Image (tube, rainbow, N blue to C red; front, top):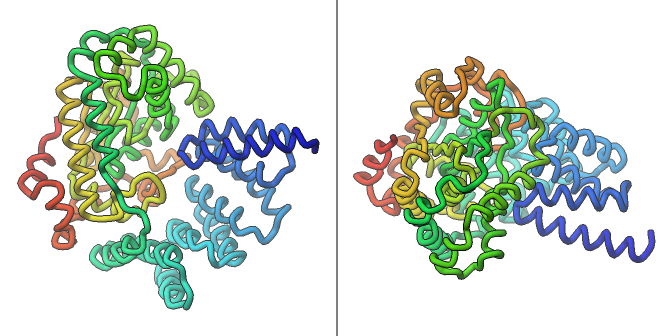
Length: 468
């Protein structure tokens, strides 16, 4: 390899790593493809490309083939087996996932994330044995805070599967106490305030209908753990629908607009610049970003399920006047508890603490109240509780809104298989059920800091019942 090629490869590595760590995995996959052209046998390039293909382009099977080949060429590398376990679990291949997770721990006991993959892959008859192993692992001397947190969350997830809510909560709480990251809501509040200032009712009226009139897009938004994954799978089971999963496309377009118009531009300047031409350009940029994920370009409807896109609902409405924007709603305390139990690894630091979880939910709710005023009927709301208690009736209502005929497959998405990348990967494989409704009541006393931060039970119950 020449010096110039080596330098080029190093630059691609650096660029790809920055994009990947920022969550822009689709862009990272493109960078690693270029790196693979320079060094097709480089194991680091092959590994990173495989992970970016999985996260960035939903090409799980392709990524799995590459990782299995790497595992043969480089035996003893626990990180490769951990990645295999993660992808196998996302595809519902539990036996393969469990074997790969066991191998990851055998290769490197410090890869404690693999315990969660074992929990996700376990069958009901294995839980006692796995629970005993986790308890023994927690007693080992010299555990780092991260390792102890991983083990506590894995044991909490296992207890949660057994519906031992209080015991599970205690483990999650102990795990969160070891989390180094804490949420500072100042930046999030600033972003929400700026978005409300820019996307005023006047701007929405002035630019209405000027974007790309493509009718395919369905954007599913809401808080994490509000049921967005369930609705995504139900819609994707339709014969005329494909899903691109969670993409950073809309967020990336927002960043592009910030650069073009100015991150500090006032509302008047922003509104003048965001004309029909720029809106159509923004829509094209969005399609360029999600293009590698669009495995079925002939589909008449395409679902982009990215919960934080609730921030940009007005931008979506302007870019795509004919798109459907669906807001998932769920009881605030079930959302908060579910986020708290998820142990998110990136981007949701508010869920590490009960009080900040409540603050973050209230920020979300207040922003949605503004978007309701701005968007009116463009914001179509779906209740998680209705979706799991009356799946056929509720999904029929959603399909009608999306201009689609009823398809009975949508009411039974667990039969469809396919890729699932969510903290509820086990639950999502099960037939639709209402077992998660009202779980907050088991630990209501422990949730007191969250309840106070949301505004108290009177506000919570009023908000929970306010679904259109």
